[in-house]
Image (tube, rainbow, N blue to C red; front, side, top):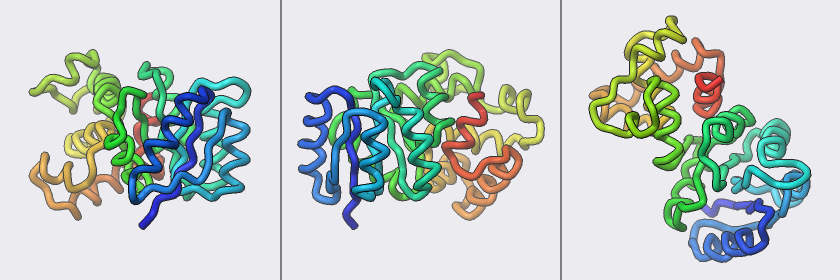
Length: 220
């Protein structure tokens, strides 16, 4: 299956570079490019992409605003953020707006292509720098500490969301790390159907409908 991609970035050299490198990936088709959020919204209507590769900080209509408008009007379109910034506020704002994934611009072509495929299939995905920030927020640790083996994940989540069981908190933390259901199952020694059940329970208790919304809910 070919995935239709719209590239959005206000810097022409970055935008053109992304169009060029993604056009070389066999299962991706770049259907358009836009230089700001307003142009991106119009381009989605015109080109019907599967994935929008979205910059955040742009003049006029910025990335989060465009993301919110696109995902509200076209819930089947996945927004994947590609930006220079990996700070708490930028990540939280993008996820709250409806982005399904978040990469920084040091990502290579293969990583971007993999992330595009992931969000197109309904998954959430984050690069390692963003994952460390998210885990730090979930665990109460600094990003550096969160990236270390042997971290703990349950108590801080339970303090904020006492309705979650310890296992549900484990699952939520791994959702924030961008893990798929099979990956969560392997890490927690569970079956994939069991993980799916836990994910459904977490969504119901947090009042969300997607992985990105779950992470945004925790980061508020």
